Image (tube, rainbow, N blue to C red; front, side):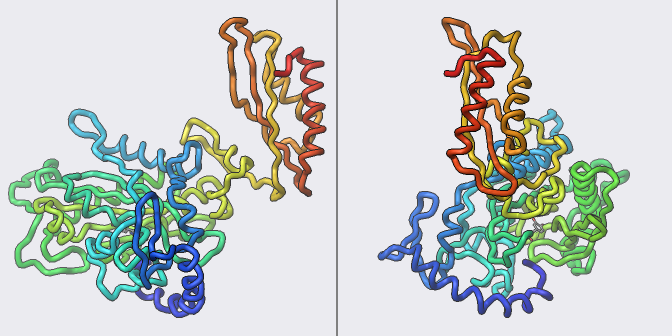
Length: 437
Ligand code: DAH
């Protein structure tokens, strides 16, 4: 989004296609009084409105906080890393976490507060989903930086859904999820561990901007911040991908940081960009009232990392409600090593079975699983123990299982699944002495 060089060539290509989509989409969304209701709020529409019904339908899904969702596991791993890495004197985590901020933001938040030039290509209608001229679906979680700093926060992570009009393929989807982080430090904090640091300062008067620093910063302050930031991020990468992962830093440009970098990792013999970061523009801090601090910040895309970590081949899978996908991530430990295995593209049928056990000791779920597999063979995709219940009076235990049936080569009919399910019930009664409820 921020690459000025390659942006323009992409732009000419995209304009022609997307303007057509916009006219139809707006008509479908806006009611007669030119209003849209999004996340319970009314918004006026105008000739900037280009948000589509498809996108609106996904507002509020919040995949990043859905229990057991791969994006949620990854979010927790990153949060845990920050909790573990940065603690106050009293031992409490320094970073506070915001994963619940509305994605509907103003142009001021998304661009102006971050010093994005008025003519920057990322502001274009062709790149963002606008609700109206002044309001859009955030294009990055960086949009909340300035307001959180103005609220007095010094260390925070913002996690959420972001929206960009981009190409559609296996690695691009118009909605994805980002984590942004900000860490502000005072002069005392950064020079505390430096010997003879009495004369060291955060700021320099009449300095000049160079590739290494902003005009107002001292080089020593920037270097200490840069080192802390780069160590934090390379260690995060090692925590996620293992200590042998190969990383490299590449200089980059962002309107809101200077100097700025991208971190790349070697993945399947290709260098893959995983995050952008830098020393925050002092003007952003100044406007937000943090006048005696210096800051580093970064932003990363969760899908890009999760696809590599879990071997997920297509970005659309994150939006799948399919049990064949979701159940592979149903683990309580977010650090569990999970490698996604593609499932059949044919639809599943899920039937439940509930029964009273003959007695806790004489029954094992594994026996039941074997019976089901024996009868259903390869069309059994998953068996889930959904519910356990002990009757308050009889003290008898009941189990409820969901059985997901799915054929790898064709669509199963509900009728044929019901027949197999009946056989499962009969076999369970005969072989396990259970009583169907
Ligand atoms: N917002 C940038 C993007 O979406 C990523 C980024 C870069 C975030 C540098 C930051 C930062 O907070 O300091 O591409």
